[in-house]
Amino acid sequence: MKKLPEITIETLIDRYEVLLLDAYGVLVHAAGRLAGAAELIAKLNRAAKPYYILTNDASRLPATTAARFQSIGLAIEADRIITSGDLLKGYFTKNRLTGSRCVVLGPEDSVSYVELAGGVVVPPAETFEVLVIGDESGFPFLETVDTVLTGLIRKLDHGESVHLVLPNPDLIYPKSVQGFGITGGGIALILEAALHQRYPARRNLQFDRLGKPHAAIFKEALRRSGTRDMVMIGDQLATDIHGAHAFGLDSVLVGSGVSGRVTIIADDLIRPTYAMRSIRHENPARRSG
Image 1 (cartoon, rainbow, N blue to C red):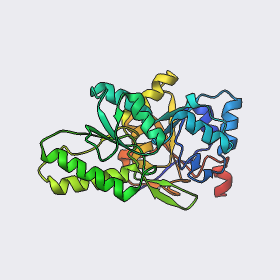
Image 2: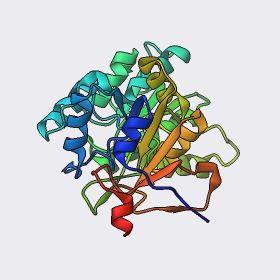
Image 3: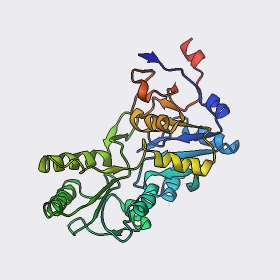
């Protein structure tokens, strides 16, 4: 196992042209902002430093996310926010799903993402061609999941096809400084396991996962920034760090979210470039001395 080199946020600002910041576990948790977040965003804004928020959250439109950020003291504009929900439009176009009947699990903004992508949203009990898991909130959990599973089995038993779409591949997220919650990715695993038990010979009954660690969200950041001189700052090895590594970007693992205070990594396949305890201003040399 190898110890990760530690770095400060000030060094990152000087070293890279563009910062990519995860939201949950880096800037915020479900209950509010994390220590140092307001100071960092204010510093970036004052310096006109290019940055983008890359979030797997598909429960809020960028405008809604920006309003939430601003309500807790983070002056982030909507055009700096890239969400996994934004990727649905390209997915629907590529797979010719415009006009398809879609069941959406998630709150109002998750539904809006699908409608903006060209889907026709229908209630879970109706027939559908596409299932999108936008979030774990916004619906009665057990009742809705049971209804959707029944509808999926009914379709598959009749030889019909269905598109399974998961914008947010995360499994858990930080709800508070020491609290965690399940995400839409966890719901997808439940449904995939149930379908595998029903149809053990069918290996194609998997959700198409769109957000980090997959390339589409990083491609959008590249399109907006116009440079590969970017660094991804995130709290999850499997999504933030692995996604950056696969896209050819440097990365920083922070210990303020899901991964915890990780400074030693055994897996070189998803090894971050640096470690940082949080985005709050700290001096590693002073701390270790």
